[in-house]
Each structure stands twice: as C-alpha cells, then as structure tokens.
Image (cartoon, rainbow, N blue to C red; front, side, top):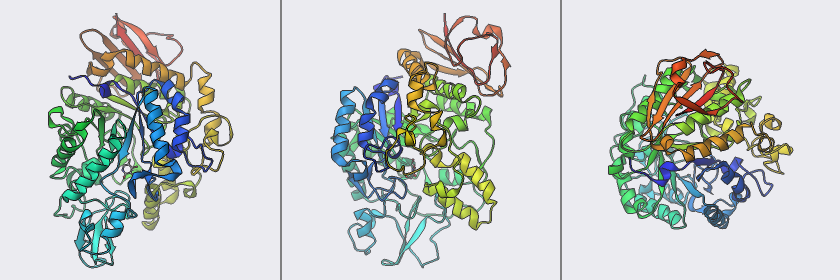
Length: 551
Ligand code: NOJ
C-alpha cells in the first residue's frame, strides 16, 4: 500500500452556517472559523473540510451555487477566505472545499441565460427535453421529492433537476461545461487550497435515453441503476484529473450516492487516476425502510459490521477508504448509532474509537467531539431543511399520520446535525450574539465545549487522546483488518496488525453486560478504555470500548 499524507490525515468537517458567527447576524461565518482555529488545531486533526460558502440563494444551504468564484458575503467574501487559507496553513493545517458541479443554482448566470432561448450559447449547459407542459419526459422522482423535470415556458422545454427545482443539473456532455468546471477547480487550487470534497460526483454522467424506472423499484436501486454511475462518469473524472487535479498535490473525496461494493473501486483505484476516496452510503442508509429515510427501521448490527468489513476488503490493496458515521446530511452519530441518553458519554467515545481504529481516512463532523445529539424540535415550523420540508409536504398530501411522521423527522431530519455548535453556557450556546438562523439545541447547558475542556473525562478530551493515539500508530492507518466476531449480535471485535504491531479492538454496541472469553486478551496490554478503569477483565460493560496492543 502506497503511503500518502492524506491517508495519514484526520479530517474535521465544518458546516460554516452553524459553526461560529462572528458578525452577529445569526449565521456562522469565515471569521468565526478563524476565531476557532486554535480549538480545531488542539483536537489534533490535520485537514478541515468546509461545506459550500460560495454565492448562493441558499435554497439548499449553499449546495445551490450562483457564482463559483465568489464567496457569499454572509460568510465574509473572498478576502475572508484568503485570510482563512493563510491562517490554516500557518497553523500547519490543510483546508479542502466543497465542489458542487452536478448542478448549479437556477440563479446562476449560466442558467438565467440558458432558459432564455434554445439559441442562447448557455442553453446547452443544462439538460433539456422537448414536450408538453404536464407531460413529463419520464417518471423520474427527485431526491428531494416530486418530479425531476420543470417546465420552462420561454423555450417550451423541461429541464432536469435531480435535487430541488432550483438546482438544474449541468450538462457534462458539453465540453464547454467541463472546461468551465476545470477552470473553477484551478481557480481555487491556485489560491492554495488542499483539495475538494466533490458533491454527488457519481451523478455527473447521465443516461441520456432517460428511460422510465420500473414502478416497484426501491429508490436506492433507482439511484444506483438509473441516476448514478452513468456511462461517461469515469471518462469525465479521468479527464478532470488529467486536466487539473494532477497538477497539484491535493486530496479528493467524491460523494457517491449509488456507489456500491461492485463499482466503488472504479472510482478510487490508484492506477485509474480519478479520485483518492469516496463516501459511500451503505452504512448510512442501513436504517432506511421500504419508503426511504422517513420510514426508519431498526439497525441490523451484523449487517452494519459486514459493510465495514466488505469495504475494507475491497480497498485493502488498491484505493483507499474514508471512515465516517455522519455529516450534515444525517442525524447525530450518538443518537443514531449510540445511546444519547444514559450512555451518551460512553457511546460517543466508543463511536470515535471505531472511527479512529478502522483502515481509511477518518472524518469527524463538528459537534460530534462533544457528543451533540439530535434536536427533536416540537413542530415542523422549527425545521429549515428543504429535504425535510418537502418530505413533510408530500407526506401530508399522501394523508400519512403526521404525528408519526414528526417522530421520523426527529430521528432522520438533516437539521439534527445542523443546529448551532454548542460552545459554552452563554446565550445561544455562544454561537451568536444575534438570533441564530436555526434554534440551538436546548441541551447546550449540559453539552458544550467550555465545560468539557475542564473535565479530563469528557468526550472532548477523549477525542483528543484517541486522535493522538491514531497519529502515533501507523498500524491503525495502514495495517490489516479482520473482524473476529462477525456474527455477534452486540460486539464488534477486530484486529489491526502489521509486521510491527497488533491491536485488538472490542466495542460493545449495547446496554448489556457481556462476558468475554479470557484468552482473547491474553497476550495484550490494554491501551485505550472509555470507562475510568477495568473492574472485571472478562466482563464488558454497556457501550464499553477497549483497545489492546500486543505485548
Ligand atoms: C449532497 C450534499 O451533502 C447535500 O447537503 C445536498 O443537499 C445534496 N448533495 C445536493 O447538492
């Protein structure tokens, strides 16, 4: 396995809108990030990834970009970003930005021009279909509900939008579009940023026949077989790599809806020269029921472990994995995979131990380092996320039981992870002196950075310890992996080893006290534990996590 700085790095993801507001307008901003750089550095991470901060009408919180080369004034504009890049580098950190090039905002100049006439030079920047109003070109459903086609009166055509109607998909078949995108990438890389997280990059090549999807097909299958992994996706990524990425020493991670164990390697195999890593969603869609994320089902733990094992096997000798349990699109990891009540502290520590001891580059999402939880606002009126609101509308039109649906929203809404960062005990958790764009989670007096800094047993201090432990042990980065108990219903037990060291890692994903066979830990020393001490070697407590190192 070839060594690289980005394989050995740990990434901290920032959702700027909710991180720290320095101006008092209730929206987090770049100066807020600058204020907190010492804090980020103190965690021991290496790279910060910031979600989109470009000009945008904000229908999808910045994933609808109206100007790729301008930073939104709300966040501080281009000068503030230049300063951030400089300060990040002075601290010995790196910075990657979000690249959203499957679609633009409908307020982007390209689209404003494109919709004027079929002869407009920008028309072919987007994907159009002739037809009659109300006779949709096919039966495709948008990721955020409703159809993927919107009628444009001026040209008497539909345009394609896989996300909201305000996010028209770009036409990557058009070489001019690709050239524009490579110039945008070059623009930011030449400013010194260290790479990109590429939004829904698996969707850029369309199957231009736009065939209907079978009626009874699950949305997951529709995504894999109809929307994602189109015929030219690898050609486009190779071209992008050749034309621009390969000219810089950077890291790339592609977000990949529809990427699976069968096609995953094609995106990241080193000899293919496309991307360094991808985010797949096998483990993050595991609790989606037949009707999708707002129809949650209990987590199948054996399957959960199997997903990590299979992806590790797939990328063991070629390519590289990204290890993450959440981000701004999913609920809080401690609420979803841990226990956010009695064992919040233990389970939050367990989850980061999992992230830091698997093979791949670890990603931490802001706030998880203090064990922030889901929010459960009392009514839909408090929610902001367009996906949540669209799903709510659709459910009420379909006559669903809306109090049950609110429960599903509590579990699954993307706003769970978008509530403001909980810095301290002050008003609005120290996030803003103004009115926050979305209400702070009421539990901030119990869960905040300033209290945890003072407590040596806090989740935050545990994060620092386990991060530094990972950084000191290359075996945890590159070493082999084997699941020792794939069928255990509650324990995740695995080994990581290379020619120098061997680690045994045991996690109890339950509230149960479980027996442990004595011989399994015989030749090891305990090096990491999420409880204060071990009372009984052979009994694992609820949400206990232990890391052993060979003698
Ligand atoms: C994935 C992003 O992470 C999400 O927040 C966004 O809504 C969609 N892509 C569309 O850009």
